[in-house]
Length: 348
Picture (cartoon, rainbow, N blue to C red):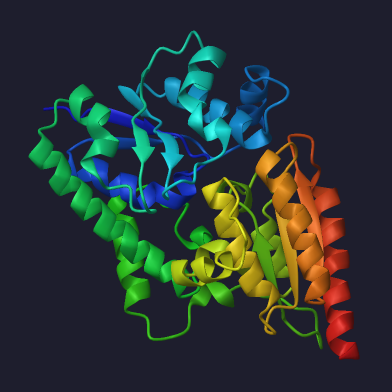
């Protein structure tokens, strides 16, 4: 029997949950089809079908959905992420994403499966979060629950490696489950420090390696086209990169407990907790806040981090990206920032 193909857009929370989804669909005997990597053509198609006011990550998502619609998939999987923590929601654009896609793409041929994700933690494996998927594909509840359990166990192994210092970049380009399983097992059995922290570092002669925390949502930091491949550019300049995905939940929660009231948006809270952890860490030389132009939650977060960076005497920079951002702009700014880091270390 021919496997049914389920398309997964390579956008937004794909970078956070793709091991979970690859494992889930494999256990359900479905064939996951990932959209192509973001490109100028893909982005332009998304921009043409988008409202001008929305942020570039949503425009990218629309482009990826259009890309999947051309790949002869049977369904496009696009859950509506509402909450990953009690009394905290995600960005309003996430809450209305499936409706926005249907409005923006009335000619979409492929059926969209849009379960609503309501969870008390990042673990989204409850059956209630996948009822539409189960019903649409005629998957018995017992089979679905078994597949969800295996998917969340696999995803947790991936997360544990991130907490040990690996970057999402070390995994995100892998689309086949078998290869991903091999890579995760290899890293789990490697007694050496995580290679991702030091690989390809090319600090100029007689220059120190610097440690920089890049704070931003996963879809901004790890979509290499949108951010002009900032992670690899930093590595080439001799920078060890630290991201929020490396910070364990208990550390983030500890930092959030110092707020009189957490913010309304879950991933914004995660970024805040990780950033505060890095601002207090003497091993971190500076912090870059990578944000998409027009992001409402980030407009609040950025102001808080800028104030706190001054308090902790940590060098801080905001990089804003949109569909018009040029590579020379990014390179010039990060080069100047790194030069400042090295000068500061020499003076100290």
